[in-house]
Length: 353
Ligand SMILES: Cc1ncc(COP(=O)(O)O)c(C=O)c1O
Image (tube, rainbow, N blue to C red; front, side, top):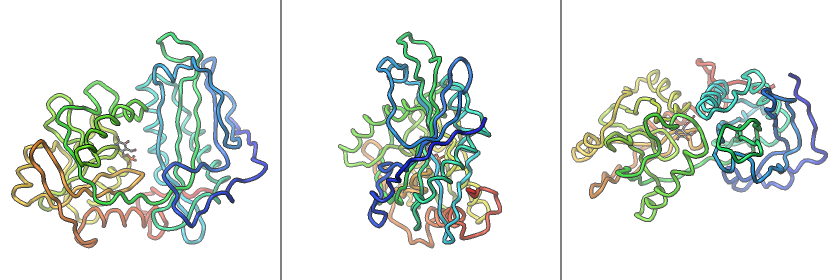
């Protein structure tokens, strides 16, 4: 299906001061992609000026939470070429989320073309500078106007995006969850559905009151296995091995996690994918073997953890130098690929025409 394009008459780009901070997700570029599912099929795909939606209060998304999303980025190299990073992985994951939430899948080819067309049209909005990028947010909501609790018969698929700065969270102290859960067996943890995020806010704010910045989510059945770091995948270096939990229906199969595991292998860093128990981490902490820990995800790439708390225990993780830190070396390697500063033997970098 051909994408219909309506360009904005005047760009808003002059309203943004690119030399100052670009807070995450605050500025949206000139255009958006939108396509509606009704009568059992996708309608005309359109790129229009970025604008508000008019949606009935009875739309199903407001009541039953049929809402999914993705998060990905476009990068500018020093010659002003623009690149996406592993876009097909996001598309595939989006459609897995759609299936789990009983929503229609969005055709992969059209999704891919929409990303290229939208980012190509708004490429002036892709900032330059290490860590800076154009954050892309594809999402879908159930928009049928009806309050009966059955799947929506109508959906809006959209892509919006805007310039963002590097996220440096500083050193983050995390608390291991011993009561609350982000996800459960048979639940929606592996899907990027809105409710997974809303449900985290309360336990995270309780952790903040205790002086932590984030929560390490554990398995819901026993709270004995470390699984995710807030809204990121979790990695911990015990001795010389970089470890992360296996993907399961409770975990989001992160694209950064996947990339890190592959790069680490090629950089000679020993990795292990398998269950990580709270008990062994506490034990390793006492022996001084917890060398490094970090969250990883599209937004921050690598977000260093400086301490892990669990009930009355606390493991302090002193910062390493950039050369010593696996996280920092891996972040740089990912940046080098994303910003086209090095060969990409993996085919992850995709140029936007
Ligand atoms: C719960 C959760 N885990 C992990 C990740 C990291 O995934 P990715 O590397 O694909 O951004 C994210 C962010 O998207 C997330 O929301």
